[in-house]
Amino acid sequence: MAAATVARMAMNPSILSKIGSFLKGGLTTKELIQQRLLMDAGIATFQGFTTPGGLDEKLIAAGTDFALSAGSGLVAGGAVRKMGAGQGAEFMADQMASIAGGFSAYPVGNALIRAKDSLTGGPGMTAFEKMAQEDQKKMVEQIQQQTLQAAGYIPGMNSPAYDSNYLAQLGLA
Image (cartoon, rainbow, N blue to C red; front, side, top):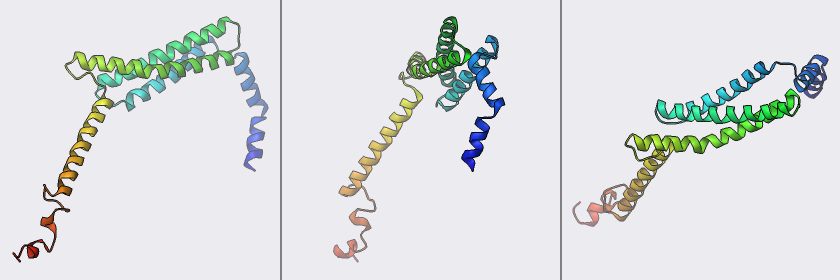
């Protein structure tokens, strides 16, 4: 039943005409560019929110993502428009180039964040790299602690001091 409903909706003349006008071109160039930039801005904002670190690092990540995704998308869309293709082809070229620009923004943004960190006296690392380094240091400390406890050098649950018969074995209880 659900498949039949979807098929009826897909074959609806108003939906088909909207798809056709999209492929032929029903919006002005200004409206199309605004729509595309809005999509790029939304994804760049998400990138900024999900980047760990301070506000400066979040702005660098979001700005780099927006600049590279929007810029490459607009260039590709403009090139397809100049070739005389319809708005659907222009939209697809814009989206593919925006995705490629977004992926290229990660290493560029990370390089800018590393440079900023280095210039401000830090070790020249991104927040992700700092978190990974802290996690690595904690893991090394945990392994050292566990190894020393297992060998009996540090009192712990596995050491002889916690054996209930330990004092009796020594003749002290």
